[in-house]
Each structure stands twice: as structure tokens, then as C-alpha cells.
Amino acid sequence: DSCMPAEVVAAVDVNTLANEVYKHNFPSTPLWAKTIEGITLKEFDRLSFDMILMSPPCQPFTRIGLQGDVSDPRTKSFLYILDILPRLQKLPKYILLENVKGFESSSARNELLQILETCGFKYQEFLLSPTCLGIPNSRLRYFLIAKLHAKPFSFQAPGQVSVISVNKVADKLDEASSSLLSKEKNFSPSFGPDCSSKNLPKEAFLFKLETAEEMERKHSQDNDSSIQMLKDFLEEDNEEISQYFLPPKTLLRYAFLLDIVKPTCRRSTCFTKGYGHYVEGTGSVLQTAVDIQLDSVFKCIEKKPEEEKLMKLSTLKLRYFTPREIANLHGFPPEFGFPHKVTIKQRYRLLGNSLNVHVVAKLISFLL
Image (cartoon, rainbow, N blue to C red; front, side):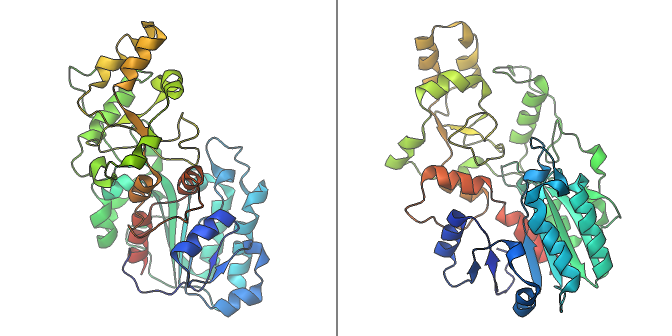
């Protein structure tokens, strides 16, 4: 996707299922099913690689986790890389790292920056969401790019994490413009880094458990013409789609917690590994009955008997996004696929632990 010619000398992962999917799509790439710390310095030197692309375990830094940081055993592999890096016979020229928002305030990040500076790398950090590239999916992630013995990045400021705005990233990553910088403390979690506040129309109706702020943010995102509509990423209706419709039990129990989007919306929430299995906070659901207004369904619905409530909710024809549709939003090419034996639940789990290909490709092309 970055259009940069490169040979992958080794892909490393311990997840058996992820490795099966990787092998299915890249059968000729050397795949090492082992832990990073299981690779010796000699083996690293033998690879003689020019670039490291890494996505260390995110659990030690997640907002809802214990935030164990460097004391969490799952950071072991990352700390091993930091230990190995200065001792390599030949340092890589380029590094790209991805992690969750929260990594930027961790001790692990501080150790990383210290090692990079010691080894002579210039680096820049970002908090980026796919919406920055016009993709209707929020997935805010921390990224770091580093270049050996290079001039400082032209939008670099020491100790700052760039929060890139939706209108700038696509052009500005290419232009390396200094206008990109924005202090993270000015980043408003209510509206995210990828949208701005606009006044709600007078007829807007607050339904479900939403606040006025949330409603305003959604309205703003859906009116941002720089972002594509969801319909560009959806599969055509077929017989298999029927298995993705929400069952009655789920509709009744979780109706007020669902983030509902239409094909014409320009937003969707972050899809997590629990999507399709858990409902709350795992990702948006699609309203396929596009002519039905949400407020007409949700107005006074809590006072209605269960049967009538279900009848009203069913008119929306809500379904989960399919794994292929989530892969489309993540930027995976049409030829990307799963082995047949990988279940739908497993596909959701793998995609929930994935990242956005277009964002990474843009950063690689900028790095090189």
C-alpha cells in the first residue's frame, strides 16, 4: 500500500491463529512462530534488516487495563528489543512502532526515546486515527517513526506528540509541514482529534443514553465531507449477510447502548476483539433499513411492553459489520483473506487486534 519495494526478511508472532492467516496471505515470507526474546543477537545480526515494524503488546498501557507499564510481564519482548538494538552489528535505518493511546505517557516510551537518542535516531511521535485519511472509522493509536543519522523531522518538537487533524494529515505527511504540531493537552476527548464541534440542528432528538455532546460530535462527523461514507466499504447484500443481524435478545437488552450508523454515515467507532460477541463498546452496528428514523423508534420506547419494543427495534434491521467490511475499513486489500477454518468470532478477534494499513503505509512512505 505504501508502494515502496521491500523484502520482508522475517515476520515474528506467537499467536498461532494470526500466523495461519499471515501464512495464508504471504506464503513465501519467512514466518517465525516464537517470542521476540527467543531470538538471539546472532540471529538478529544474521537477518541484517534495514527496518523494524513493531506493535508491542498494548495491554500494559490501555486505559481500561491495569497500566502495569514496564512491570507488566507482557512488556518483556519490547524491553528485549530495546536491550538488543544498541548491540546490533548493523543498526536498522528505519523504525516504525504502533501502540494504544496511553503509551505516550508510559515509562516504556521514555526508555524507547532514550535508546533511540543514544543510537543516533531522529524520531517523531503521533496520535493518529484513520479518519485523518478520510476513512470513516475512529481508531486512535500512538505511532512513532525513527530514522538513523537523519536530519530532524521538519515538524518535530522535542517531547511533543503530534495530534494530526483530519484536514491536514494526508497532504501534510507528504509535505512535512510544521503546521501539523498541536500539543496533546489541547486534544479534547469529547470531540476526538478527528472532528470539530458544530451546532446541532433544531430537530435533533436526544435518544438512547447519549449526551448532547455525543450527539453533536456524531452530527459533526457525519457532515464532514472530507471523510468517505460507510457504504464505500460495505459488502453487497447476499444470503450470508443474514447471519450478522442482531438477535432479538441482544436488541432488547442492549438497544440503548448500541452505536447505530447508516451506510451514509461518515463515522464508526473502534472495532475491538470482542465485536460480535460482546455488545457494549466493541464497535458500531449498521442500520440497513435506511428510511427509518432512529428517533421514531427510540422515542418513549422504554415505556412500551417488550413485544412492541422488539417490533419497533426490528424495523431498523440492525446488523454487525462483517469481518470483510471491518477489513475494508482497516485498509486490507481485496485479495486479503482468511483460511476457511478460521471462524467468524476468530476473525473479529484478529481484526480487533489489528491496525489500519493505510495509516501505516502513509507513515512508511513518509519515513522513506
